[in-house]
Image (cartoon, rainbow, N blue to C red; front, side):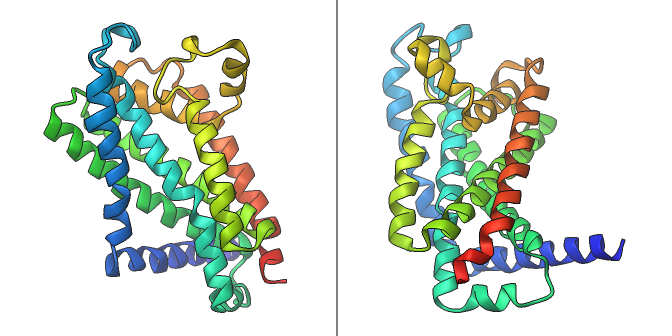
Length: 257
């Protein structure tokens, strides 16, 4: 019981420290909001004229709104490892790992901080959707469910990014691999077009893409109201999150060796 209490306390303390950075300088978060705004305002509006591209009789901008939210969270989380490398370079990570806090709590705390950033991004996209008149399901329980998915998804890929950082060890390498990973993940998912439009080999690949399940979960809560596939989506996201957190906590110490 004491170990569990210490773990939770350490993780929340680290998450609070990371969140404090956002309060002191939120410029990066505001700048991150530009890309999803462009996707909705330009890409979504232009392709709205193409009837039949979005299934179920929805407009295209309705269809891609959950995908744009997932994409923005992915871009925040996947580059989180660059921050870890910077902390290593200035000596902060060495001091943090020398404390009694378990490495698992360090990873979970930093991943939770990525989740906070993801929630902020979600609020911005919801506000933009309301302003431009995108018709989504803004039921309080659905919105709360979307935020839970956002936090888990951000934690998943922040932990994945920390795993990569522990192996690659430089910011330049992290920047390159981050860009090389995010684009294929995004286009090999159902974020901006239905899986049925993909060639067969890409349909198979999309089933192993965590982003596909995240978008499915968000779309069911924000658009369709069909929760039949939600348990599978959440299970896939939970398994991916636990797996990458375990990987990150296992290899994190390699970053300072």
